[in-house]
Image (cartoon, rainbow, N blue to C red; front, side):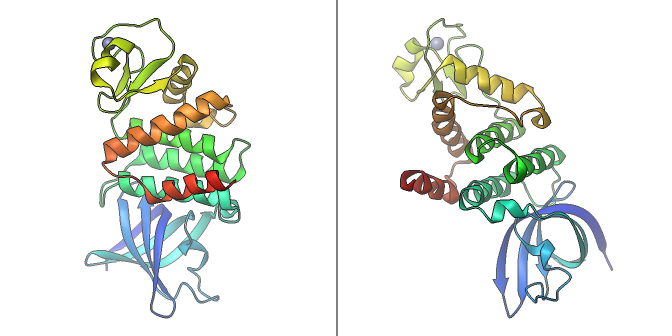
Length: 251
Ligand SMILES: [Zn+2]
């Protein structure tokens, strides 16, 4: 028998049969894993708590062909507070969906796992708004994926423009000066305060970002720039993101 012990976070599940569930688990040393959690929807199941989204647990799996079968699980943190609040749940689901896009099967990613755990912890227990935490996560994710944007000079001509605001171009991967934006024309307005915030988030460990406060201008600019840049890089938009936009419009 091929026994695998790993910690992981449940990113997604699909119910099937009477009481089974197929989980997508993110393990720091094995990346994305498809895990069969048999009978986990029975109230008496030992796997019930560890088969919910957001759950962070120590798992024991048996490898069977392409999938893993859960045999034991010990919950380390269920992040239950995320699931009982509609706003936190919406942002949290978006964060899990982004993670799912970013990790591969059988390819560990310790750095992203570390960022995800801290993000979920802030989302469940922190003082920072779910929206701001999500922007921190988006930017950290962009960095982990290798798309750290150029923020200290125009990415096209290399100038260090004095003007404020500047422009952010997803196609160029960083800020561009007003002159270059006249040619490229895809830049989003970005003020210096937003640039400084982005640099700070990129340079500082996520453990120390829990008390970060954004002005409304910075929040609005991060909101449009980061999702625009991510969808450009991932070459898709994340469905859960549209739900967040609906939530915002509704309230
Ligand atoms: Zn330029």
